[in-house]
Length: 337
Image 1 (cartoon, rainbow, N blue to C red):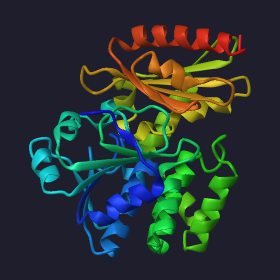
Image 2 (image 1 turned 90 degrees about the vertical axis):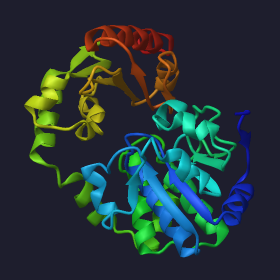
Image 3 (image 1 turned 180 degrees about the vertical axis):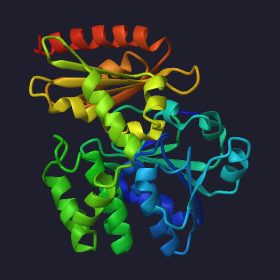
């Protein structure tokens, strides 16, 4: 595939208007922003009379199941993905432009002749689609989607507002992170006016945890390491810890934020061992002053300056050592010795 072309918002809207059969997808391990954006896009395009089908890479995380009560979000089948794309006029890839994040259909997407458009807010991107509309200043993909709907004149009804609010709120840590700027609050107000109810959504998302998830939080808080004079928190989640808590891989979402409650912590790394012998999943976060996307990129990953990720081959202890060394070096270079 040739290098992706950067397009503006009117061009992106025009491309969507021209298509009648649209396939929508996002990154693996879809979070609130990915699921909210995909579900909202599918709903609004169907309201425009288009045949829009949404695909995820795995079943919806239990935390977000209430966003898909009618099971409209299906799961990719690697064996039939090529046929699904061949039937579509357009493939929309939301909240990512990273080849590593759309496996195992990466090669299918890159080889497809179907026109493809990514809508994203991340800095890191690969040439996996033909066109890209990106706004790296946006706090969430859902914020971009809300603006796209308004610009196109497509209604944001209460259900759509709820989906987009979840995307925006979860990607800003319920408006605690540094990306929660004035524009994010303006979009949030727009969605509340359209029918989103923040108090009810917060209860569904954060006051409704299953017991295994609560036990997993306890395991994290009792075992994380403090390095670099207490400024770096390292969390290791071997598979035996997940098994002991009866927790799933999906329940690890947001765990990386727990050690950041400690006042001295500036950055945190979470290493999760997969159920098989695959690579270690490494998540990076920083409160301020540490560009974790730059560190993640040295391990083949990427993301935002304050939130990034990578997959690294090796044992969890070996990967932890390498990542810790890279983080400590980066923190020292960026004034956090």
